[in-house]
Length: 274
Image (cartoon, rainbow, N blue to C red; front, side):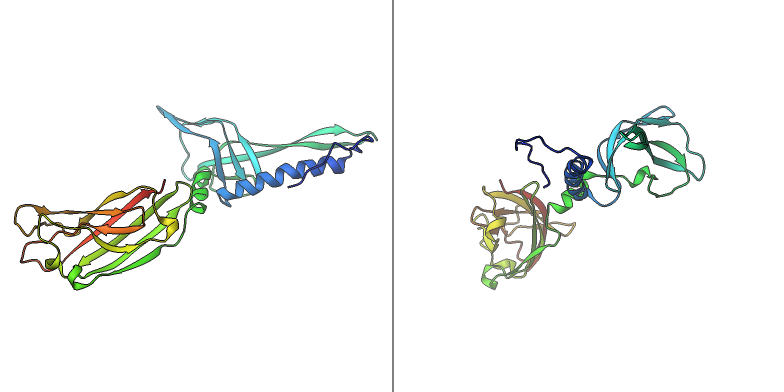
């Protein structure tokens, strides 16, 4: 990060070059943070849309576009002409300064934006309002794994002969685990008889995906109809799953009615790691 040390004695030689260096120091930092929210028009805050009768109002706010953080001044409209869209229109300004040699330049620069109704266009000074993407959208994407990790499940026939794949990935922003999968118990009659059903180990997660607390979740019998348990007492629709503090993924499989040799469950859930 750029910085200037002002502590040295002797009279600091302040010139336009040094002032430009200071300006670059904060604009570079601003750009580095802003691009985390995406490469297109990025909503930083405000610009909330409200409707009252026929009038739509977009409130004050800030957005980032083409390397600049720009103030948006509130505006309203009633009807949008056919063929037009709501645009964000950027107006650059340059106030003049008179220099020591008597010359004058437009040196005090600013950019502000307002609403404009017109044909859809994306240029250096305007873009459709609907193109604005909230900063947290892309920032959130950067904060989580994009690809799924996989854990292949294959238990012995004596343990239900469960097969399938468990997929998982981590969201670093929320420190949470997203887990999903589809498992089939191919030898469901080998599970312990009711009511003594036990939790069966499906696999173990790597250490960085393990929650700090035992966490229960539900696996859903994936067929619309239901099947009875082996005592013919209850209908099977849900199976309890757990990820324990050792990273083990276990399911409380239930032995079904004798006529059912196999059944499957699916699950899709988010688990806090804190």
